Image (cartoon, rainbow, N blue to C red; front, side, top):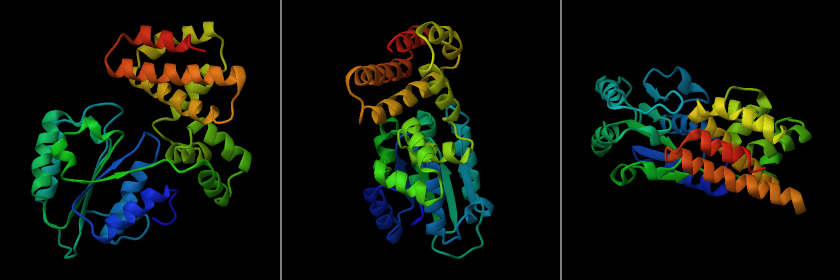
Length: 285
C-alpha cells in the first residue's frame, strides 16, 4: 500500500493492522475517498497476493450494491454459502470478503452478518467499507477493527498526482472539483468511471447556470433522490476547498452553498420532500 495516497494517520493505522490482523476491518470515510481501492489493497496485503492479484483470485467475494439499493438478508445468505466452500490453500489468510457501502445493510442483514463476525471461518478476512459507521449496529462495529480513511492535505495530494505525471493545472482543478477526495480526484484525472462522476458533472453545470436554469433542473433531480444527495455532497466538497482562499462576496456565496448543501443532504436523508429541498438548494446561490 506504499504507493497509495493516504493521510499519515490512516497509513499508520493500516500498517498496524497488517502487522497483527484481525479477521474483520471496517474502513470509514466519505464517498470518493477511495475506500474500495483501499479494501482491495488491504486484502492483497493480508492474503500475500501480488498487486492487482485480488481481481483474479478465486477465493474472494465482493458485495457491491447498485447505487443506494439496500443490501438485504439474501445477500448475506449468499455470503454464508460462499463461506461454506472449502479453500484448498493452507495459509494464515486464504479468503477475502469485501462489503462496499456497508451502511446500506438492512437491520436484518446486519444481524445475520453479526453471527458470521462472531465466529468467522478460519483464514477469512472480511473488510467492510462505510461512509459513516453510525448506520451500523454497535455490536457489528465492535467485531471489526475500525480504520478511519482521513482526507490527505492539499499539498500531499497535489504532489502525489503531479509525481504521477498529471498536469499541475489539471491537478489543481480536479482538487477543487472533488474537494481533495483521492478516489474521485483520480477518476476525474484518469477519466475513469466513478459513482460520483455524474453528480460532479451536474454540480459543475448547475454552478454555471442562472437561478432560473437551476430551478428548471429541480424536477429531474427530484425524481432521482440518490443523484440529488450526491449533488449536495459535491457542492459541500467544492465549497470546503473554495472557502480556503475566497474572500468577500465569493466567500459569502460558497458559505451559503456549503450550508445549503448540508441542509439538503440532511433533509433528503430524512425523507423530506425532494422537490422542496432541492428548490431551496438551487435558490441558495
